[in-house]
Image (tube, rainbow, N blue to C red):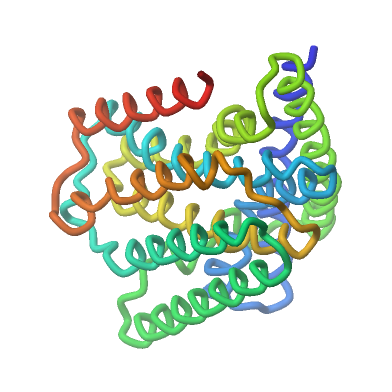
Amino acid sequence: MVFAYAALGLVILLLAGDALVKGAVNLALRVGIPALIVSLTIVAFGTSAPELLISIQAALEGVPGIAVGNVVGSNTANVLLVLGIPALIAVMHTSHCDSRKSYVVMLAASVLFIALAFRGVFDWIAGIVLLVTLGLILGDNLRDALAHKRAGDLEEDLEDPEGADPDMATWKIALYLALGLIGLPLGADLLVDSASEIARMYGVSDEVIGLTLVALGTSLPELATTVMAAIRRQADVALGNVIGSNMFNLLAIIGVASLIAPMPVASSFLEFDLWVMLAASLLMLPFVFLRQDLNRVWGVILSALYLGYVAVVLS
């Protein structure tokens, strides 16, 4: 039953996160917040809400391994699995995309995260550093977006935030918000408790459960988005999805969770998992800077590397 409870917690988290995004987006647009601001902030934060609640709940319950493992494992899965599996379905022409600036920022965020991890604990100091860095990045993104808007070449989908519905009734907005605000902590509590119980049942650490079961589960929305992007030949959406998700995982999720409760960093992260995460991020170099397409050969390589990584962690 513990696996069923874990699956139920994950489903509640994903559905509640989606409801919160829809409610928050339409509420923001209803009260006059520009769609541009909504796209860059509310949607980005809302789609990371499940991971955020899991990390906060894990920190409060004294299982920081799940919190940190969720972020590190998700970032590794985002590159190796979330890009690997869609590439097996259809070639993504990443050679046509220009994601260089965002990618460099993601790498810098990864290096900063690793440096802070070597302090031995993610505390309020680390949390402030991560959140200030996120604020600077969001400010820079907003400035770039406004510059493009003035030039008349802003992407159309930036003006139509995910979940926006101009005709949504007020009661429906309230319902979505309520479902999101109630469901997220409920799903997080259920998943964290179940994951901890699974770790005890099989004699593995909370860190391993965070890196595998929890991280893989919370990467499912990114995987679904990237699969659809591959089918629609939207390589820019696929790359942007992974880069944006990884930055928010490192800066926002651990940043906020560190302010809630200090989270010691296990030695296994410092010795192995953080470096795998960084190496996985560096594997995106050919697609971002060398204009290589993400084809089926790369799909096999990336997917195989992820399976190998999980096998090593579980062993």
